[in-house]
Image (tube, rainbow, N blue to C red; front, side):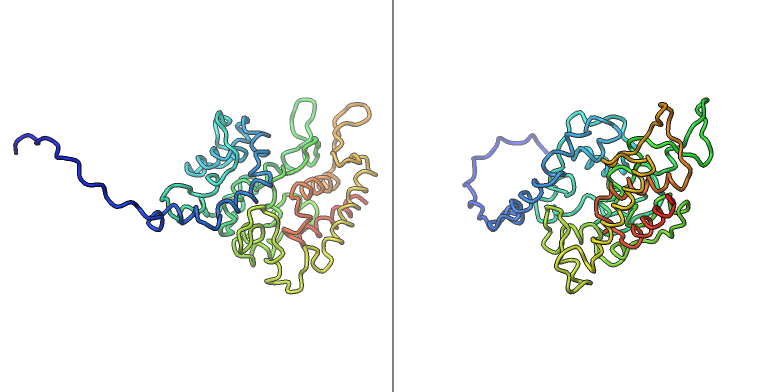
Length: 320
């Protein structure tokens, strides 16, 4: 074949695209679907930038505190322990952190970044809760009581002794550990760890409760989801559970304060009067750790009511 000939004349303009032909409107619709989701999202800590500002520069934190870092990490098959550096150009958790936005430019972009079951880093358990698996990539413990061994003068761990720090807890992300009932204090306290009914019976676990059928992006727990099992539920204090929880949690607080293990403000006491590190036996240490773990879970025990109540009862017994 010979060389290509010169370009031909410009053709006639094609017909203008109609709005109905544009896939954009599958999401950017006239009823404000995206605006409604963003309005709710920006009211809470993920969406308003607070979570990003707290810890995005720390390599141990950026996976969950920077939205674009999370998205990239999930795509790479990483977990929160596997970053080499903090986020140099962080982003708050926006739509792209959880959804595959502007991948197909259709409503398929609402798809979540992942729903693969999660191998939890500290407990070793597997969380398989549908869409809630996305959340558990971050909402799992960073440490257990075993991470706080007391040490002798040479720095060697002392068997069955524990030294608390002001962070003698799981980190404020242990929701999945509580839901599965897998804290390492179970054996010390004689508590049988069982997964919650909210794990086995609520479709999509975290998403089912916190977004509900209408996908409310404030992430406030939706009572409408509760009524699928608790038909007469008017609020989250179902069968008076929250009232009982508050009484027992307050009793644990007061017992720990009375033992000199906790300040009135709820902070673990780390030094004795002479300045030496506090050293605790397993039972009292477990009771103190339970207080921190339940506080960090921040559900008032609702993520796993039976398990949390058993932990509280056993902790109070351990302090007698």
